[in-house]
Length: 260
Image (cartoon, rainbow, N blue to C red; front, side):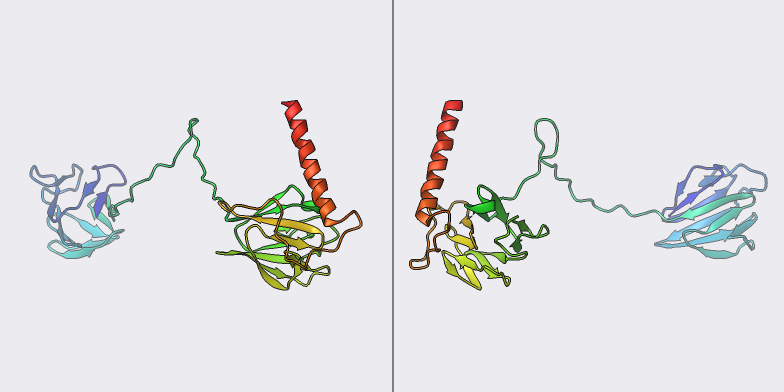
């Protein structure tokens, strides 16, 4: 606790343990020079957290109530004490806590805070249709569909508005069909629920994804369950699609070679 003088008659005073004498005498703890202040006007006695005011030779009041000479009153933080015409407020002092040591954030060369990006455990790589060439990190449960509010939105009429749901597990993605019209397939086999492991293919009608995981070697062609290969599309067989894809990649590589 401390004493605060609103009108500035005296600097703030920290109330320590023991006795504080107030007055205009030479040997008092708090010297107040003002009309009406006696040589030994009053005393403040602190014992632990208990503060007592004792009136001695001068006029003393607490929250506007007069205290007779020789009288005592317990004081609490917030009380307003009057020493004659001088007013003083008793204020609580906040105890200093031990602040945890600040850990400096890593910064780059220009002083900006560097944000560490988490590497996703699984990534769906689009290998056909509207998803071709795109990647979709999967770190939480996500819904795939053609609705714009899906976590993985594919603008294609071949898949349902909310087609399937994928959920990461230690072994891969747990896949669940959400009542789609054209079905959900893992390695060519239609499933209601199933586990998609790294390197395997997820197909929603004719939209295909390959599941990629960091550090896991992925074959150049996804593994299709024998006997469950998808039916040939009007645009050509699955083999023809693969050959066309390889040819397109080769052409892109050749173009890059001549550009650079």
